[in-house]
Image 1 (spheres, rainbow, N blue to C red):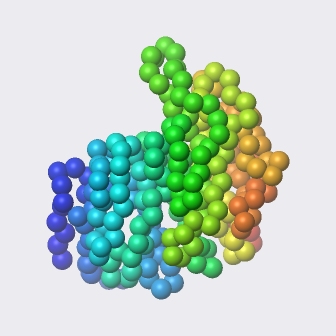
Image 2: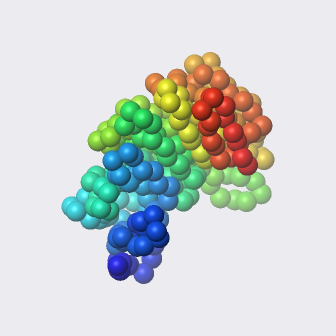
Image 3: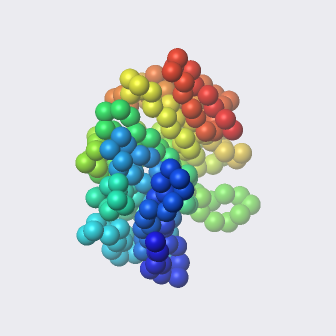
Length: 261
């Protein structure tokens, strides 16, 4: 079993081993970094791929599956592979003039028992975003951070729900209500789903230089800077928020949530 790099830069690698540790297959030739993975009951592999800022043009995932990258921004792509490692489809989480992925925050994903895929992370920049349907977050534009004289892009926490065919069903973007001292800054780093489809995400709002209030929808808000744990229902409606806890997530059968960070 071998894999061949396609360029001198980033080359994603996806490898399958059996239960005895014997290599089954390897897939490479992808310009980008394959990050979080999830497996469904049929053995399909769902992967988040972070495309580097140097990439442009058609990005090939094999089997005729491509996405087009038109700018020099970081982008995150959701890719479905079958159990043999053959790409089935690919969907960009963001495009246009916004950053995601390596420069826009760590993305994570999870699957529920109904065939839905949930992606959580952060958007950076003040441009437009496309998660399958047009999404443009509201908030301040880029500004300069003192004493460093360079633009600082706002960042927005994001959740997108896809069905098993890769079609975006709904999306939620955390927006800043008030911001003092810095651009809006929020992001989700971990996501988990329970048996009834409820979602739990953890992340942070604000920065050392900025404070203010952030809106998660449905009257759920928190004051920054802070770390947050947020519950959404299966329709993406915020249910409650807890501050002071952020990190990796795990759920038990009794419905308790564990946060490590």
